[in-house]
Image (cartoon, rainbow, N blue to C red; front, side, top):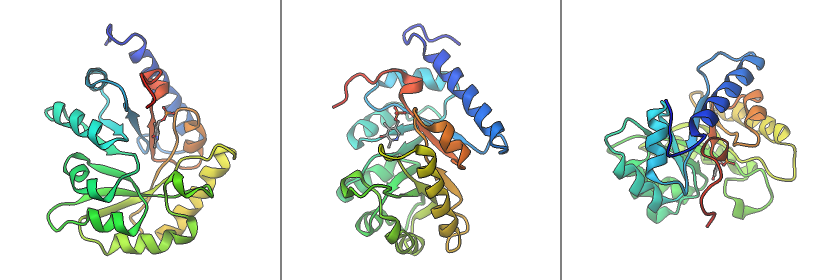
Length: 228
Ligand SMILES: *Cc1c(COP(=O)(O)O)cnc(C)c1O
């Protein structure tokens, strides 16, 4: 299918899908184990519609207000909404209302704010691979304790770990570290087998280290309209 209003979108999507398949094969991993989430932050609803027409099901957004509006506008499309940004506790309930998956759970107070007796939401714990707390994520030293908190909190289903590769380190090494952390998490949470890692610049390395959820924006959508 062509998307004349978004030149190149279909081609870029096809290119990324092809290189994801190639990287999965090269890593000796079974096909179908990797989900590509297309990150559409700052892009209009019409881009998400075009992506849905091209068979995309998983959409990533990182700002609550923007995500809420888009999810409401597209409620009749069969999409899975991934909230991938840092999340304020006071917005947790609202995000839970439309998000299928929350990727950046990183502290006790947020876990408490996401608790629910009525419904389940899938979540990833974000690990901070830098020394800068402002980057979001729990420090590796605090990871297992946070995992245990999630496991005893009603309404959360822990899928695994999420991370962003630091700028000052080879992405592949950073992702290998996340893979090892994931192995230790599985000793207490055997079902937390997923790894949300890999963006436009580094998803091939992420696949090689076991990523199951790629968060790919600009390589598919093109340049983001405004970085606010
Ligand atoms: C924007 C964003 C992405 C996608 O980034 P690209 O470099 O455009 O692929 C992935 N993960 C998070 C957390 C993001 O905020």
